Image (tube, rainbow, N blue to C red; front, side, top):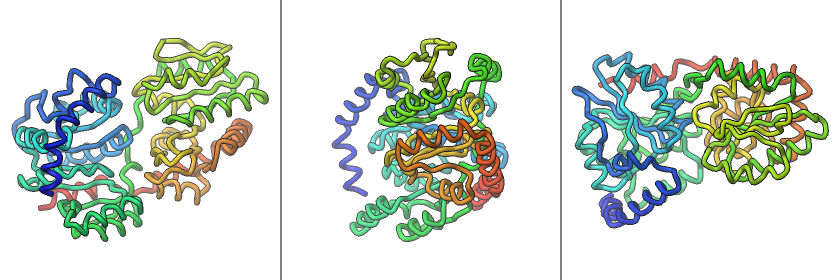
Length: 416
C-alpha cells in the first residue's frame, strides 16, 4: 500500500494534465474541476455524513433505492453522493430536490494521496459505500484508517479481474480486506470475493432490480407519439462506438421491408454525436440536441441528450441495449424492463451476466450473437407484437420477484 501511495504522489502532475485534457474533451465540468482534486465546493452539513460513491448512470440509479433506505432508517444523517461522469452528475442533480437537502453531490477526487486526504479530512464520513467495481486503494485504505466503516455494495468480479487481484494479493496487496462487508450481485461473485478477502461477503441479490423508474416527461412522450403516428419504429439505447454502425446497417436493410421505418438512437455518450451522424450518409435524420423534430421523412432520430432515456423506454415497445455487441460489459436491462420495454442484447454483458442469464433462461429477452442477428430480431419483433408483449411481461415478473434487497443491506450496514 505504501508503494501505491508514493506512486500516486509521483504521478500527480500527469494526473493533472489528464484531467485538463478531459476538460478540453468536455468529459469534465470545468467549473467544478477542483472537486476532482479533493477540494469541496459545498459546505459540510452538521452531524453524521455517509459517503456513497457510484461511478456512472447505471450505478447511480441502482443505488438510489439504498440512499432512500438509509435516509429513512437514519433520520439525522446526511448523504454525500459522489460520481465520476457528467451524465451521472446530471442524473443526481435531477433527483436532489426529492431529498429535501439531505443529499449533497460532489465529483469523486482522483485517487492521489494528497487529494484523498483533503477530501476525507473535510467530509469526515462515518460510513463509506462504494458501488459495484469502484476500487480506489487510497480512498478505501485512508477511509478505513481514519475510522470509517467501508462497504462494497452490488459488487461484481469477472474471472479475469479476480485473477489479477489474486496475483496482487501474493505481494501483500489485499485491498478487499479493508471492507467491513461486501454485498455481491451473484453467487459467482460471492465465490470470487471469498477467495480474495477475509471480509464478510453477502449475497442478497442484484440491487439494480430495485432501481427507481427512470424519470420521463409526459408531455414530451405524447409529443413523440403524435409525431411518429402509426409508423414502425424501434429503439437502440445506450449504444457505444462501433455499435451504431450495425444499427444503421439494420435500418438500411429493414427499410426495404418497412418503407416508413423510424430508428431511434440514444447513445451512451451524447458527446459522440458528430461521430455518429457521420455514419448516416444519405439517410434523412433529425438530431434532438439541435431541437430538430421528427417529421414524416425522418428515418433516424438521434436522441443525443442527457436524462431522457426514461422517456424513450416508455415510448418504445422493445429496445436493443448497447454496450453488448462487443466485450464492453453491457448495461442494466432493469431500467427498460420496469418501464414495459422488451429487451434485446448482445452477449458481451459480463458486467450484468447473472440477470441476462436469468432473463434468457426464462424466455424474457432476446440474446443475439452478431449484427446479422440484430437485423433478423428487429424484423421479427416489428412484425410480432404478441412476442414483444410476452417478453416484456415475463421480464417484469422476474424483476418483481426480487426480495427487498436495499432494506437487507441497510440493516447490515447500520448494525454495530
